[in-house]
Image (cartoon, rainbow over the protein chains, first blue to last red):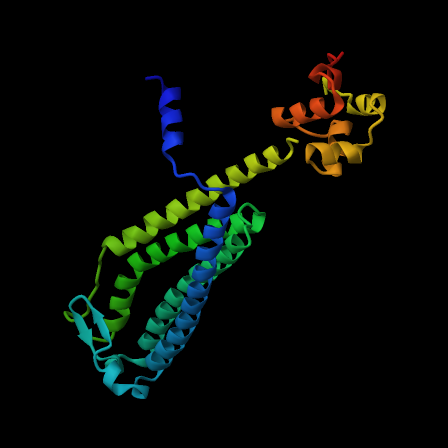
Length: 203
Length: 69
């Protein structure tokens, strides 16, 4: 069997569906996910505010902050950590929430554009590439935050009790890998946009 | 460009306006204008077939090759 016959067989086996049906499906899923992503953005903002407030003033929520800091073997009540170090932990947390917020803002905007069948505009492409970069940034942040946070949590302790936590697990690898996948997919979409633009110049 | 589109010549011979041709073949009048002026990258066979059917002509009557000097 020639490669052409094989390709023809693959084409015949695909379910028949009109372009309008495909676009409707994209619009339905994008509409739903746009609202989900927007809700997640709101949750991130609320959570960030609460976490920052508790880190700055652990007395706000004594029951929670009594066992708040847990990094591998490090178990230390948040209230026992000096204010300066707690502020450092606050900065780290804020950075995490800021990156996550950037990710989900881009996701929200992308789904909004996909809902309007705007797949190949320069704005959609730019957001796809940015989303990939932010996802990779979160993966790198996740790798670095454990050692930094462990140092900040135990900096005031005597020698022998300070700690440095290092970890590399599936979550960090997932974000770096998935982020690079989205980034490359954004570049591929850019090529598809150029092809579409050229096709539109055929009458 | 070596390929010259002589659609306006054929339209004049058949005494047909661009608007009528656009309606017959199912494309916009703007695209017919682009085609007449040669400001397109290409023509699909399907479109060429409809044009030839509407104007009762051959592709060679509309598309002419003139080598660049």
